Structure formats: C-alpha cells, structure tokens
Length: 50
Image (cartoon, rainbow, N blue to C red; front, side, top):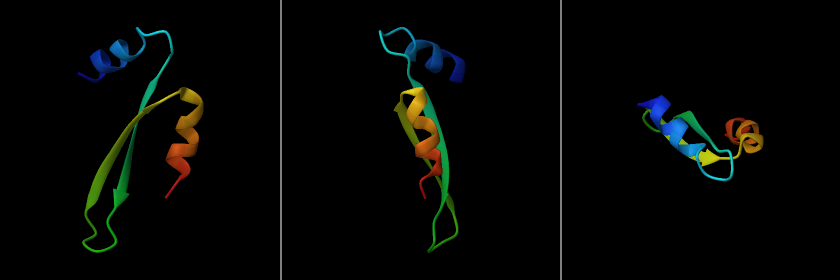
C-alpha cells in the first residue's frame, strides 16, 4: 500500500514526499503518528521539529 501511495503522489506536476513522525505523549507516554505530505526539501525540517 505504501508503494501505491508514493507512486500516486509523484504523478502530479510537483514531486511530493509523505513524512511520518512518531511523537510520545507527555501525559500517558503513548506514541502517536503524525503524517504530512510535503516537498522533499521540507522533510528534514519537519522531522527535526519537536
């Protein structure tokens, strides 16, 4: 399924990447996932944010 999603993102005029980040909740200690679709240049800054 992931390959199909990434392949469909590249068919438009712009090249896009899907970034998934795991964040730990300070209250419960459980992990949640945050997904975002962006240009490849923005991925590093998205993953560096806390």
